Length: 315
Image 1: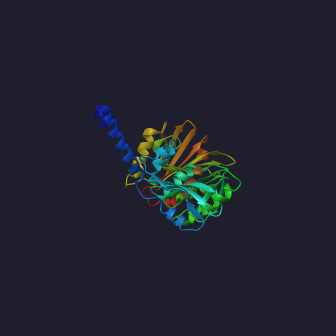
Image 2: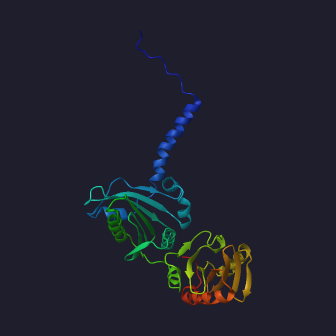
Image 3: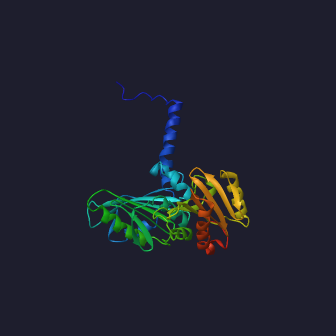
């Protein structure tokens, strides 16, 4: 018997194409996932004696964010998510104590606050960690500082709450920038009857309508009325205010002028009353009459006078 093997028949053309495609995918996927360096806060954490990375961090951009948080990507992308860094972090002093750390670099501190506000609900516990406010539970913590939104998730055990609080404190210290909310959110926070935990910065479909976004909203409940507050920041350009009113008139149902400087629209949830205030627009929505709405709009306009006097663009 000859020791020489017969020649192998050539692969079919379809098999060659499939192998080529597989090779392309094998080498292209790591290149996409490696785009951009991990968040610099990770190196600060690693330099501390308390924490260690249990696996190499992974990064994701807008184009492949769905691979890591499928179903949530559409929430993050309108807020200008530039890069997500995911790391598993362990506590050196507590074997087995580990948490998933997600660091989202957003387009701006305002966007970081915005996505944090989407994770903030009434009746949640918050802890002040200067300069940030941290929403906590027994297994999680959410916070923002500068242009970064942070999510922490720990395995459930008797010590997970202490773990996420300790890690949140270290992450806050490792980040740069302000942790305070934008001025519009602070204005709504001071409004009489504002319901805690309801302030949102909406980049899409505020109260169900794209023409109202971007803007800030909050729920309120006073002895004589309740509903939603709205504060729309200045729009870019010298004619931004007139262009905004034109769009509101074209897209809001039943939009009409009720008086000089006062407009109304008929939303499914009730009447929306709007009053331009400098470069901003103040609004109040609910089952409110004009007599009930005008004092509330006056409070918003007075509180936002300094902010809106200069016009300008959304920051």
